Amino acid sequence: MIPRYSRPEMVRIWEPEQRFRIWFEIEAHACDAQAKLGVIPKSAAKAVWEHGAFEVARIDEIERETRHDVIAFLTNLAEHVGEDARFVHQGMTSSDVLDTCLAVQLSRASDLLLADMDALLAALRKRAIEHKNTLCVGRSHGIHAEPTTFGLKLASHYAAFRRGRERLERARAEIATCAISGAVGTFANIDPRVEKHVADKMGLAVEPVSTQVIPRDRHAAYFATLGTIAASVENLATEIRHLQRSEVREAEEYFAPGQKGSSAMPHKRNPVLSENLTGLARIVRAAVAPALENVTLWHERDISHSSVERVIAPDTTIALDFALARLAGVIENLLVYPEAMRRNLDQLGGLIHSQAVLLALTQAGLGREAAYALVQRVAMRVWAGEGKFLDLLAGEAEVKEHLDPKALAACFDEARHTKHVATIFDRVFGDE
Image 1 (cartoon, rainbow, N blue to C red):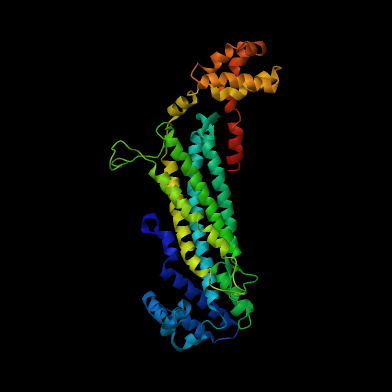
Image 2: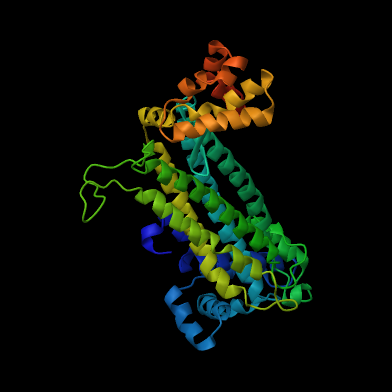
């Protein structure tokens, strides 16, 4: 990812220096296990830790000749370790280093993403409770439906991100496996106890069957999880964008002093952060299909997955890290306008209560089809600008026949739409 959409801590996980450091630790821990088993001298394992070093520029230089990154790394390492370097990488294959390293990197990236989600969840929870009973119009198909509360809107997104966090925890556990099994994964030239030792030291589980590479269905599930979280990011960002439209303006992104919205129109206050989040979500989701395609490899291994993962692993985690942090800031600083919500609630002259009228008429004895036709006919007159819904209904003989004025007015009581908000909040936040 470009620096504009990157945060240092996540970027650091994917820098060459960090990657080679993980490679070194994998090789050094493997040497310790080999020494303990008597396969290599203990002095050799000690020498690797004491003298082991590498230089990214030197590795790149060697790779230009060898065309093999792991061999280039081992060659550079040997330049520092000396004679004992012949005991490094014994019985191992490149994928043992590469796949185990990727598992470490994705695990560490997941920890940052989980922390990001905690911050976002905290922001959503705070604002949801703040606006628990702030009445606003609900919309289906973009059209006014019935009242809801702004707190319920945010609670819904909170629940989605909490599910996403739970999925990410599972995906992290599934991706965090170690493979030190040698060529075609049979342990023909290395003891399985070496793999267990490296896994323990690197904070990973042992991969049951690695076939030289860790099965890519694990990675597919991981990137699909990131894609789902990104979809939730876009869902919330899109809601904010819609609410900030000039004709709605029920909520909007914070507009900082000195901020400019347009190079041409000084009056503009655009939802640029939410639009940016929509774009970043697309980048993360775009990795899902290639990750699924990586599951299919030739026989025990090939490297068709490698180039894909070198791009999508850093790009998706860096982009999602940035997006989650940005979204948390948007929610924390979101400007909410209850007076605009009130204005929009009243915009259609009471049509948002049509279902309550329909139900009251059916409960009073009118057939559902007849009641629906009656309410819809009056509603269409309101759409046409002929008056307020309650007033027009009150003038209908068939309505008067079934509902007295008090019963009709009760249909327009907004309290019916908030009476179970506490129940929903308890479902969402009660266990916290």
